[in-house]
Amino acid sequence: MNLHNGDLFWPTTYTNEPQYPILEENINCDCLIVGGGMSGALCAYLLSKETDLNVALIDRRTPGYGSSSANTGLLQFSSDKMLHELIDEIGEQDAVYFYKLCQDALKQLTEAANDLSEDAEFRPQKSLYYASSSDDIPKLIKEYEALKKYDFPVEFYEPEDISSRFPFSKKAALLTSGDADVNPYKFVQLLLKKAAESGVKIYEQTPLIRKTKNVHGFNCKSEKGTIQARYIIFATGYENDFLAQQLGADLNRSYAIATKPLSLESWYKEWMIWETKRPYLYMRTTKDGRIIAGGLDEEKSEAPLNEEIITERGERLIEKIKEHFPDMNPEISHSWCATFGESHDGMPYIGEHPNRLGEYYCLGFGGNGTVYSMMGAQIIKDLITKGFHPASRLFTIARAVNL
Image (cartoon, rainbow, N blue to C red):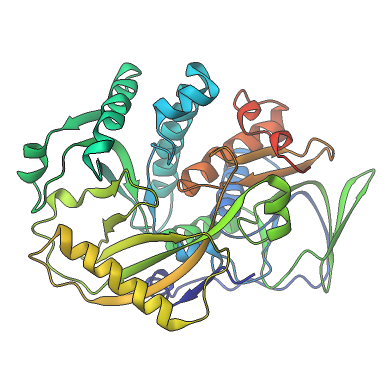
């Protein structure tokens, strides 16, 4: 599947990637991770750090070059689905628990970033979530009340609160604390490097061709070797269109740009910015003074091969930046399009396959994928080592519509 197309920015920021071998032998391990993107890297990092399991990881490409290289790196505890909306759908207790899990995952991501040997450009941040129109103000008020009730770090901003800080104003906004931004590509590479130093065997250009169940677990065949594993974790992201269909997920595509470095004096404290409209515009800054902006989502799964489409969408995103920051003159440095997935209920797919014991999934389908991946790594680690995690019932694969 063509996961992305265009001129990716993040891979240009880190050229010290480790080179991993191709699997050309038969090996044994306790746990095999399939996929070397954000989900696989976090699973490998956590399992190697907190367990004694013998872990191997394979990627059909070069690790980190799938969806993670097109990720825009906004990390928030708020979901695309607001807390009060989730309360209406799954009940107050579970909805609040889910948001708390996202908040905990952000803290764990912070700890992981601090544990790395190099700077992953991970920065604690606040997020400004504004009403795209007056019609959305009641929704923001309701969300503020729900977040405040359960002690999530949120403030309600009136128009003057926004205009006194930014060169634009909106009818209302929420300001949340405890979020972060990151260089996602560099983060994945450094997580894998740390995992490899802790003993994880990593193989690139090693696709999983066939797996069979046996009394010892799974026999996983690649092109030039096999892996016998007690457990297998699929962290394949949006790679498998058939799997997405089985899970009842939608695969869409989104556009993003990185600007050339520019003065960000009018961008108050470089807070991340997003809006209530769907699909929504989102913007953040980078450590070297660029703006990353994304949006213009389309209900098509594969990134377009037509560069003219990507260029035109990039220019539209530049105009969106100028609407918010008329004092700036941003120029596109990189523009790209990427596939992203959304589950049928807005929740990630995490846990053991209901019909195949020992087979686990860490699929952070949704706009908050990196946070979901961290949550998934924690849950799967506990399921394998303890046989239980209290949150697993929320994300069970069994809720998928076509299994």
